[in-house]
Image (cartoon, rainbow, N blue to C red):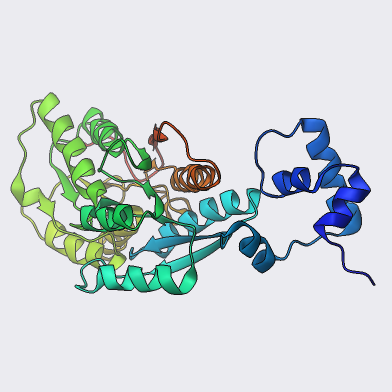
Amino acid sequence: MKKVTINSVAQYAGVSKKTVSRVLNNEPNVSPATREKVLKVFKELDYRPNPIARGLARNKSFIIGCLYDNPSKSYITRVQSGALEACHKHNYNLLIHPCELRGEALIDNIDQLLTTSRLDGLVLTPPFSDSRELIEFLKQKNINYALVASAIQDDESISVCSNDEQGAFELTEHLITLGHTDIAFIKGHPDHSATENRFNGYKRALEQHQIPLQERLVAEGNFSYHSGADSAKAILDLTPRPSAVFASNDYMAAAVLKLATQRQLRVPEDLSIAGFDNAPIARHIWPGLTTIAQPVEEMTRQAVEQLILQISEPQDTVYQCVLEARLITRESTAANH
């Protein structure tokens, strides 16, 4: 059977090869009717573009790299889901690359990745999206990049984040309106800007309601379940014990819930527990966790899509967007008696 080529598609659809290429790369300047006609021919002829030939023809690899260093598998799964959606839409491939921020060889690691993989661009997730050293390196190398959930805001960086500080404020205020004043807080990973943003929201809510911040109620976590368990032990050993615990993500909150149950504390009657992110675990455990829904998939989808558009046709203005973090109340929080 004769191989279907881009020329075959153009001839069959009655359009130019350039038009087929524009449709294939999801570029503008193609009318909706023509785009639909070409897509129909793709399907009828079962056309499968050769990514290597396509890349050589345009001096691109059509691969986007995604850097991550996050202890939550759920977070990475959600990041990957959003990135893949954008990549599939624009006929790009996605390379997920785990890396350690703290390593001295970070820049060398990324330099080698760019050399061996011929990436067209990189999407940086926390904590890499907060690394000024890495961002400056990418600028010097003229590598296109986009930031997800970054505290760095400049005129040169594509950036999509959520309003974590406001989300944490609203969740803390929710606990306060339920009558809680002794509210413990478990911080996240020290290298993530989200950690400080969420802690600031917690502090702002306490201040606005004239509740003193108690340092004894603040524990250091790192977004992992195990760090949540260690923090939970320290918090539940306190005398007097707080009436509520706000953990900076749902996995740490789940660890608090487990330890509280082991100690025969009733949740939420004896202890209200809340998390952040609205990870699957928040709705799969009992009682379901009150939390803040962070739009991780949508943040990553928009960041990758804008990165691909920047690669295809450099924009005069850089895309920057802040998405809403939303309070979701479930059974793990109740009025303090």
